[in-house]
Image (cartoon, rainbow, N blue to C red; front, side, top):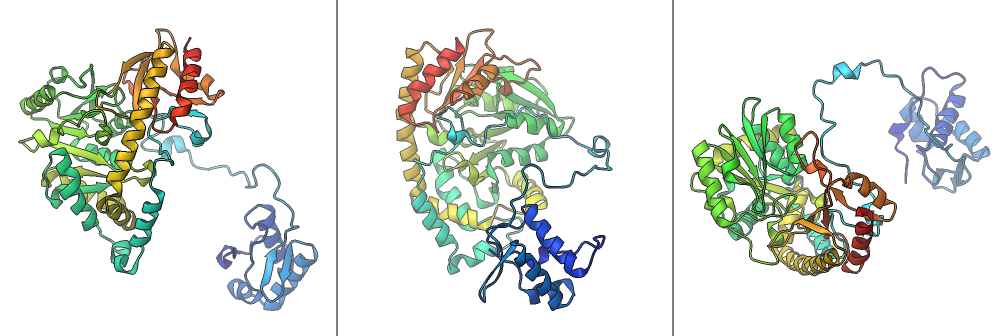
Length: 484
């Protein structure tokens, strides 16, 4: 690997001859870890031209560094950082800097301190990862995704790869969503009513920005997806948490004056409750009476492997008041960050303009790769494979839960990828989760899902999308021992 010549600058405040300063510059780069063993340095001619100095000066500096074993010469290939060069010292190598800015005053809005928990980056190294939303590499079709990515890089798709769509999206992906994905949910939409987003969370953010102001009231489920609550708090709208029951969000409990209702009817997050049809119609009636907008996050609808999924709220909507949020990130892999919004043209027009002002559009190559993966049938095969695996894992998990005397607080009757659990009163599952990490077990404490200032601490979630069936029993045994 060659070191770019643009990374070399002579410090005007440095002392000594030009030759000595060049030596200090290169030796300092090696000692700081910026230049690594085996990396190739620019040629003496190129570095001299870049620095605006004599080539002989650079040659003499290289020769001295060669003698001190900082550099090695390889025939006519050039100069390289020597394999015997000094190792960078342990610890921080950067010079401490004291900011002259008072950031407590300079920061106008704060986005830290939200309720979204930080999941360990090394979750896959844990033996019992009952953690939600991560991809299981054994279930993903790597080979066909790679082929689709290569196809999207081909000359025929060069325009799709390189074009700045400005505020538009890949027409092939939009066509697939229009003709295949949405009809499965009973939704009929035109391309002008669809917007591709960077996952469902980005879709929720765009929606909140377009629909809400400080004067408007948003009703959310309690407990709910913690990132949604953080998004709404950042929008500074008024919040009305509505406690959910075994059937999800109760329409009669939505307060008067509500402007926007956020709900997850397919698999309520985090309880996995599925809203029955009569309640879905009642929710639409309540929204009509309030003249409110409903934002339907169709959370995990693809994971309805126990029974066919219920029709989406959007499919029952005759007023155009439901905005639909879908995502491919959960069913493919979370790093994909690809979702979509479906709504009336007037709403999509504003969401499109907002998206264009902050990120233009999701990368064209990702959109085209996903379009190929979807249209060639690989996505459907992936969903079927995941459904079989999750069904088997769920059965093993439920049996282990029953065997070890743990209590289920909520589980989706249609499927899903997690079970909502309840420990006995007085148990702090946050502390239990920390204790379990030392034993290789990851669980999700339930407190962040609740809106209260002092949320209940005895709930937790066990997900089974990222753990093989053979490890579930031992993992649940460890959880049960810790909960006691």
